[in-house]
Each structure stands twice: as C-alpha cells, then as structure tokens.
Image 1 (cartoon, rainbow, N blue to C red):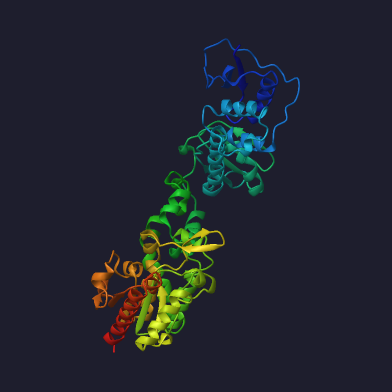
Image 2 (tube, rainbow, N blue to C red; image 1 turned 60 degrees about the horizontal axis):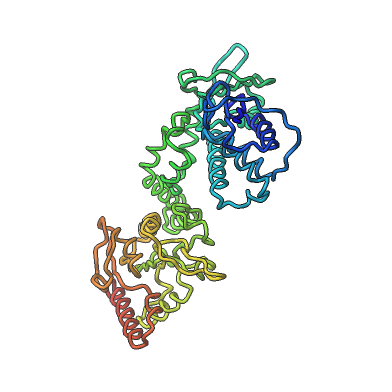
Length: 464
C-alpha cells in the first residue's frame, strides 16, 4: 500500500524526520512512499496509487549522528528525489548501522555530494550577499537581493541575525523573503530583483577600498570564477571593478615594484627585497600548497650573469635557497672548473615552489607543467627587470620555456647567444645539472659534464 508523506516546505527537515521515522518503524519500503511538498505532486510515482496519511511514530529509531548531519544539509538541495534517497539510506542503516562511513557506497556518495553543494551555496550566500541602505521613517533599512541555488534561506537566517543584530534588514529571494526589525524575524513572500535597490552612496567608499586592497600578484582568474561565479556579480558592487583590475594586474604589480624602488631611494636592492617579500606569499598556482616555502633567487643585484634553473628540489625547499642539493653541488663544481665565481652570479629558478610526488617518507621531484611555468614566469621577468643582467643562462628546458615563452630544443639551441623576446636582453641555453646526475654510463657522463663546463665558459666569455 502506497503512503504519502506531506511536508510543509521544500526545506522541512523536521517534517521529513517525523514522517521517515514513522514509516521506518512500520518497515514501509522506500518504493511505497510518496513525498509531497505542500500541494506539489510527489517526486516518486506520484498519482500511481491511493495516498494515505502517515501514522504517528510508535517507537524511536537509532541512527548515527553523521546521518542526521547529512540529512539536514541534503534536505536543502533542489534535487527532487532527495527525500526518497534519504529515506532509502535510513532503511539501509537499520541493517548496516555503519553505512555512512562507507563513502564509496553510491547512495552515500550521492547524498554527500548533495550536502556538499548545499554547504557551498550557504557559503556563497554569506560571502556574496550585499546589503544596500534605504531611508525610512524608522531610520536606515538595509535590503539585499540574492538568488540561491538551493533551499538555504531559512537555514542561513541565524547567521545574518547574529551578524547584523543591530541593523534593520531584509533579504529578498525568489523563494521567500526575510525581514528583521531588531526584535523579531518575519518571513515574507517571494520577491524579484526589481524589488531590491540598485545602490547607495556607501558603495563608492567600498569600491575605493576594494580597489586599494586588490593584490595583482595573487590573481588566479580560474579559481576566482570557480569560487565567485558571474551569476553573483550583479549583487556585488566591487565586481564592476574586477575586469579592469585583472586587465591591469601586471602593470599594477610592476608599479608596486617601481614604487618600492622609489621608496628605497631608487636602488635595485630595495625593489628586489620588495619583490622577494611579495613572492613569499605567491599563490598563482597550486604548487604553493604542499611546498614548504617559496624559494627565491639569490646573488648580487648587479650581477652580469644570471642563471635560471627549473625549480627547487627537496633540500632547496627546506633550506629556502636555490641549488644547494645534489644538482647544486654539480653546478658548483662545474662553475669552479669553468673559472666562474658563484658569489658573483645571480641564481634563481623558473618555478619558485617544489613540485613533488610523495613516496613514503621521500619527496620525489616532479616536472612542472606548462601552466605552472607560465604562472611563475612573471617573477623571473621581474627579477631580470631589476637586475638587468648582460646575459641570462637557461639551465634546462623548463628554464628555456620560462625565458622564451615557448618550447625550446636544447640540443639545437645550446651554447650560443640568442635574443630574448621583446628585446629584453641576451639568452644562453645549456642543460640542467640534474641531467648529468641521471647518466649511468661513466664515459658519457664525463663527456656531458665537460660539455656543460664548456657551455658555462662560453657564457662567461660572451660578456667578458
């Protein structure tokens, strides 16, 4: 016999819980339950059978706390089958009480995904809702318009009550409205965007502040659009500034460096220090997350010769200095054999964070991808802008890609002067010293090492 469970609203968790408890106690199979919100037809098998009211519960059920938390969030989703899916999981829990711990189970995984999307929508409402001030006889009133993706408005009410308890405000949405007069919260009917104000004088102050704190060094357009989709932009006054701020990000960041140069009396050391400090907080690509720290370049700011490697290794990541590990030892030996004093060189890397694959307690080097190289390229360009070296040596393919902006065949281009793009100076290409460490045949290793030393000598001779 088919049963119908009547719920008052799309986010009626208490109504669903009471009905689900009563049905489960009577062992009603999930495929014999119709879930109906208000006068809306049920989401499963609606109209296929005579509906009966759900009887009151005669006993209680024991379910894990994780299920209650999951249900509270998943109920708020717009998925029509959410009530039936949760009831199905509830019934399975009677025989499998630890089922919610099995995140690979298709039903558990699906409901967890619904709950996750709801949590993200709750976060977006809190982050992207903007109040605008309106005058009224009782004093200022603040009104906001928001279009949630799910049934989260009531669930979010407590957040705005706690945060703006001293203000009189209204939140308008297509599903319902919330109105706070300082003493009581009331619900109102659905609204349209036309019911919300377009702006107020405070927005000009806010936009000026937002523009002043906008950090071009940390712009990640893809991540920004993922976290702040364009659908919310019309609610937020500062987003009108975003396209222009992004378009001028590089110029603004160059301005930051130039400002630092001027603030320190026009000296390159001050500008370099400002660049190093800014790079320490770089989040342009995901490599900053597992790395210990940014490994910036080092050496005299007036160095005539600049060496660019690939990326920090394990020891460099821990020490915070470039070329101090095994490849650095090979480089030091080769520089000595070439008659070049490392102390007079500026040495850096194309990528400033260590990319690795964990293997037990070890961290194994992993080659940077093109997007990671390109994301870090700006730092190398600024280092070169400040130092203005007479020659920049690319150690390996990654460094060459960073300097020239394209893939370079090392065997074809190594050991000769090459103009860098945009008339930004001269470049020189050779292998990375780690290449020498990977050669097993001793005779070939000695031959390649001698060629590497010859390349370094040639670079030094080119600027002599």
